[in-house]
Amino acid sequence: MQHFVMTRLNQKWSYRNLDLDYMHYRLDLFELTTYPSLLNQSFKDFKGLIITSPTIPDEIRKRMESYENYIIVYLDKKDGSQLPGNEFIEIFKKNYVREEPGLLITTNIDSDDLLQKDYLQVINSNLEKIKEYPCVFHNRIYSQIDINGKYLMEINFDPSVYTFIEKSDDISKIKTCWCRGHKMIVENAKENKYINDLKFLMTVHAANLSTSTVRTRIKKRDHSIDLKKDYGVNEKSLVNFLRKPIPPEFVEREKEVRRIRKLGFK
Image (cartoon, rainbow, N blue to C red):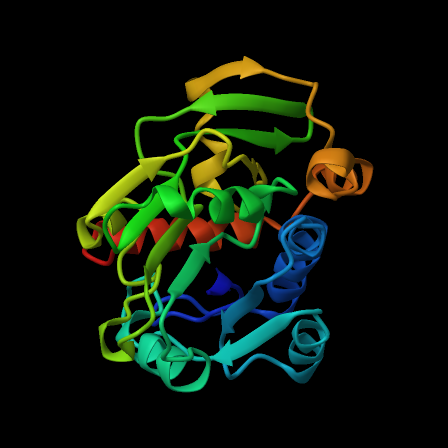
């Protein structure tokens, strides 16, 4: 079995340029959320993978290359899509996947999400239940954290954290979790499983418009979640970071990204 947890971080698109301050901001957030939650996973047999721009400054590159148990892939998007696309998949198959009997598991996580400590173990424990491949694992109920605490949500679309499970005996057929976006990934799977024990947190911050505008979907507020115990994350440090004002151009950049996507980029 080969398992990769995959994240896009500071990757340029044709309509999105990143300045140095914004790249440091995203790394700070990643180091307070996704990164410690992966380091503290109870299941250790996996590899983290980040795709980023080959044109990032040296100081950003050094920070990213210092991450424990991570592969860094340098690749820019040449169109307006969010997913790395076929070029990445070919690089991934050539350099990082072993063609052998067994399974290739790829989990997509955004660079500001947190996985509960047993998230990857839950995936491993449910593999025997799969009847057909490829298969997608995900969970429609998840939690969020903002500057005021934590709350649970129940949503009617598939969240950004999901896992694509396929056979690894024929490398030419490998697709990975990045073959489609999170709303359409099930179209590339023969089996689709919602597993309630796959628990994760999304971070609400001003530079992410999708999470800062979904509060109307709140199901209930829950302060029983212990970020340190359950996720391996320092809650005080994270909340203090979220409370810091951010430059208005960060928000304007995200608004521009969303405006252009509505014009035709997906």
